[in-house]
Length: 171
Image (cartoon, rainbow, N blue to C red; front, top):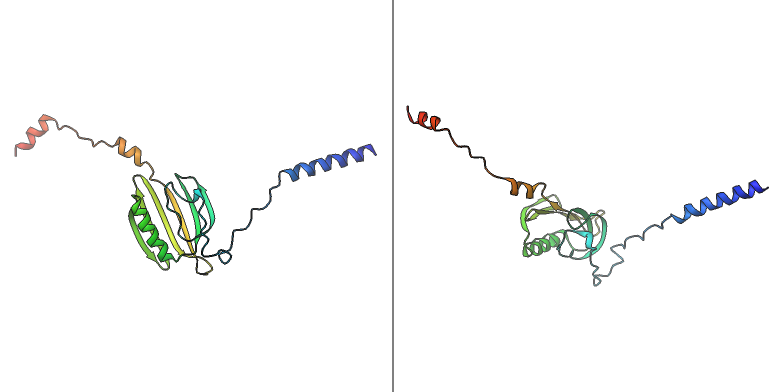
């Protein structure tokens, strides 16, 4: 009998310890229909590189990886893709970012900005399924090796031997 109660106690203790580490599921993201047009939520700080202007019409963040130096994020906005392209082109240019590439492929807009050795890539298009919202993919970071190349680059200039110079002058 004592063995059974010891076994039962050990089993209950193991279940209790397993339950302590269990985390509740995160709350579901608010649906675009539930948000009022007047309520403007601020995107999380991890939604882009340091100094990124807020996403116009921000509704939610689907994912985010990285930090303010390097990372990627997907945001949902109630604005149209054309409106987001205009807003980011204007706001980022005002903050010193240089637009390197801008192209439209189907319904998707692709923008590439740089600022010093940092880059910011935006892919903006309609959300799926189409419900009047837009999906914005952000990727940011630093150009690999940009600082090292700039500091270490010295052109190699070899002095020509005097004999070679003299012989090349004689034809």
